[in-house]
Every structure is written in structure tokens, then in C-alpha cells.
Image (cartoon, rainbow, N blue to C red):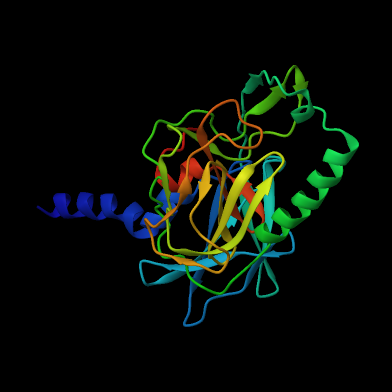
Length: 272
């Protein structure tokens, strides 16, 4: 009996030391998420990574954790989180991403003309400003719902080649779905940007709180306006093929502290 109690205590230790959020989200690789223990306390600690504010939440009602987005360009090794003026370190491991070759009929979507480039630069600045927003609200949930019911197609982080020419890596997760399929908010949030862009087509940005941002693009229709408060599961638009797309699908980005990270982490579908 005594031996059984000792064994049960040993089995329980990892569960006590690592809560649900940590088990779900801690994937410290380039393009992943690091969960850093900040200790206990009455007030939420202030944390920054690479000069940008970081999401902090209380796990299991006991200890504070920082949920840090790791840019895809980050090299494996030790990284530093600033917490109330002091350094906390965490390790980033390696991850390899495969290549994807796409053929586009519209050559302008591979090599835009000068007028297109002016538009792209203006639109990129607008979208980057949305990614950098940091509101004080706490996310309603960190285990996200899938925004559409459909199989995952192109995964996050693919090295992309359009008509044989390498371009930026795939910054989101694609869902195969028919045109017109409703797209639902994976968590509650506020609509902070709506646009119709050269590459992304019809697009919606939703702020879930503390630098956790979702972006949905290639929509055929947008059903929300800037400033709208969305409940978890609210319809924000419909699947389409606008912008640089070879067919109907949803491209979903998730950004943390202005770093695009793998959305598969938030729906429990991450594959190392």
C-alpha cells in the first residue's frame, strides 16, 4: 500500500508541474510557442520578448505564465524574455519545414508591376500595424475552435515557390473547404481590420487579446465590420479564392507578440 502511494505521487508530479495550457501550447521551435513560468503573485508580471509585450495568463489559478510567439526566422538556442526588468531564458529547438511548389497563371501575382508594388507596400504596412496591436483583454480561450470544418491542406512554415521562384514561407494554416463555407471565430475577439488586398484578397483581422491576433484571408464575403465584438463561434465571413489563391480555401494566420506562429498548436493538431 505504501509503495502504491509513492508511485501515485510520482505519477502526479508532472501533472502538478505542467498545466493544461503549457501542455497544449509549449512548442518552442521556430514558428512555435514557448510557455515560460513566471511564478506566483497577485499581479500579472509584465513580460517582453524582442522588445514587444507578451501575453501573460494565470495557469491553474496559481502561477503566471508567459505565452511567447517565436518568429519563424529564429535560430535554435537560448532566448531571453524580459520580466519586470530581469532576464528569464528559454530554449528554442530546431524544426525543418518542407517546400511547396505552386503554379500561378497570373504572372503579376509572382512578379508584381511597379503600381502593384506600391499597393502591396501600403497594404503590408496596414496589416503589420494590426498585428502589432496589444489590447489588455484576456483571451476567452486558448484551445481554439477550428474556424471551418474541413481537412488541413497546406501546413504552416512551408518554403514556397511560385512558378519556380522562392517567396516568403507560408505564414498560416490552410483548410480545404468549398466556396461559401461559413468561417467562425475560433475565440471571442474584436474585429480590428477588414480589407481587400492584392495577395490576401478579402481579409479579416480579429484581436483575441494581449497580442493574440487571428487573420483570415481569401474570403468570398466578409460579414463583419471594424469594431464588431465577436463571440466565440460567430460567423465572420465565407470561404473564397480572392487574392493570390489557386482555388477556394481558408488561410488562417495566428500571431503572438507580432510573430506569426503555427495555428495548428492552438487546435491541438501540431506535428513536430
